[in-house]
Length: 390
Ligand SMILES: Nc1nc2c(ncn2[C@@H]2O[C@H](COP(=O)(O)OP(=O)(O)OP(=O)(O)O)[C@@H](O)[C@H]2O)c(=O)[nH]1
Image (cartoon, rainbow, N blue to C red; front, side):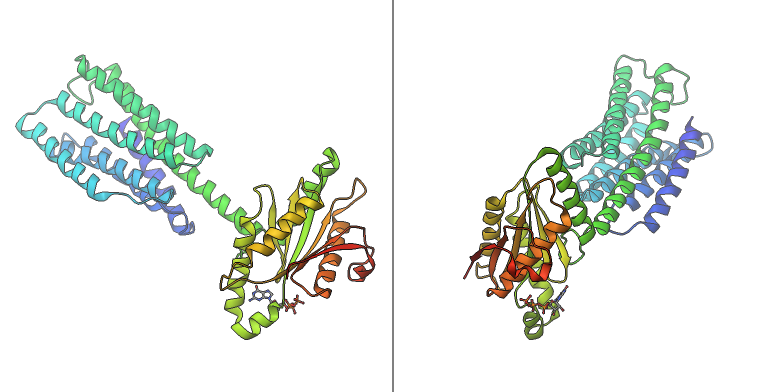
């Protein structure tokens, strides 16, 4: 069984090292997760060679490699979840535990005490990691899997400690007893499951990152046009099924070409980012902001009629007029869902026409398109309600 643990450690280390090489650096912690099974493998080899090597290798170093592997795995988890690892504290723990192992191997050789100490030490490391993951971990399946493995293994360590306390801990790791078999079996499973958990956590993060890249604009971190229109279609379907209202706003930065021409393209980029950040802050969680193209954005407001949407538009104008160096002015074309016959194309045309009218009437204002318009840029003919902000 010990050989099986070594074999599994080796396989999982290869898988994780491969992932470390090919996954983006934004997914942190994979390197440490790859090193942990290598340390466990080295420990297994030393345990296996116990008849041929001195005790400081097969007992002291082998145990400490297991401890170090668990700490390195914990470090990987902390890095993965964006936290640092306090090597100063754990370094002292390693130094202290090495001393205890040396004492219990050479000065007071006692199998029960040594195993009891090791069990408590590993239990502390797993509990610290479990506590950290419960506090900072995401609610995803891989994170839950690792939490369950850590909790189960801590439980098994507690059973092992109990068996030692009642004098049934045996006198050798290789002794064929129920507790020893249970413990070694659990250890083999834990090595495998922790590594699988690490692979799943990293893969899940990669999937999330790729999904984000495919649906978001890289400059402003708002939804891209395709994702935004998909959300609009979904909301329109919901509106048609349940009869809830829905509004959309087309927002265009005023005289943005002049901003680029006078202050430079990079300043223009910063203004776009500032606009997106400010606008996001005045929206609800259910609202969606997306880049429709260039300096034109679209805001989707589910469950909102024209009055509610107009209040949001006013908040957008206000949040961009606070005296910040990157503040800008915007024109907004606003339209609301008019009933079961309404379509997304028609709504976009109305919003576009209302925006055109806002520009035409002097910019820095919101125009509400109150009637369907046939051709976008011929929208001046449609009736509209204008709210100027200057
Ligand atoms: N810095 C920067 N500029 C962009 C980006 N996308 C589009 N633009 C610029 O936005 C400007 C849009 O100019 P126009 O369409 O003439 O509009 P405008 O100057 O805002 O005038 P109005 O819309 O009529 O108020 C162009 O100069 C584009 O180059 C971008 O990602 N970054």
